[in-house]
Image 1: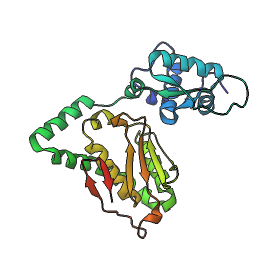
Image 2: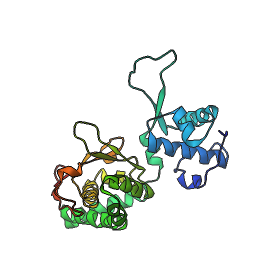
Image 3: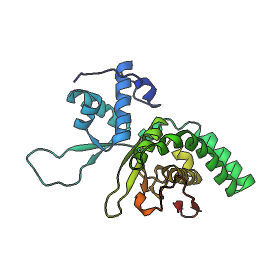
Image 4: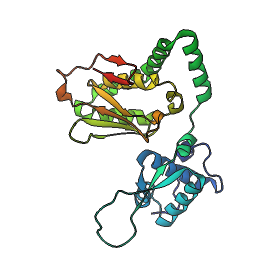
Length: 258
């Protein structure tokens, strides 16, 4: 492993407010470490070293700097049976300040515009605006998602969302419910969605249509959760292999039922 590798595109990944007391190459690497914690966290220092290709000493230096800046925080692992001597591993997670440093573009302007829309045209107009905004995301990604085999569609959607900056991942849902989970570790509009949950509702509806199966939003960054988590029901619960699933809005609960 190298001490300070350079990575193509690292400058693009640098959040606003990234530590500046270092050379450009080191700042870019530190920004990449911060993004990896955002995407994979909570994560250990050794796992970060493997992901970014740094020596343990270099990882510790960047972690110390990010801790000092308030970009990340230390979390203790759940108690595990002791397998030997030594201190328990530290896990590093992004803080709210760190998440905010990954720029939420035009948040204030967008929030003011939606407030004005709600005051002048009502809540239904806000919901329709949200659906139109998400319609563009659905238009771009639906063909690729639905071209994938049914068992790979959640992963394909996660890949598409990651390309849009959502730092998404797919995995199996914990028992006993079964199905899959779609996790988004970053939300570019989280601050706006905190006041206008219609954005989250429209996104959930679009996920259901693209995946062709019922989904349920379990957690959102906008409501203070660490990640946005969407449960995707097993396709065996659906009738046939439909590519379009009609949805019914439940605007009071913030969920999408089918």
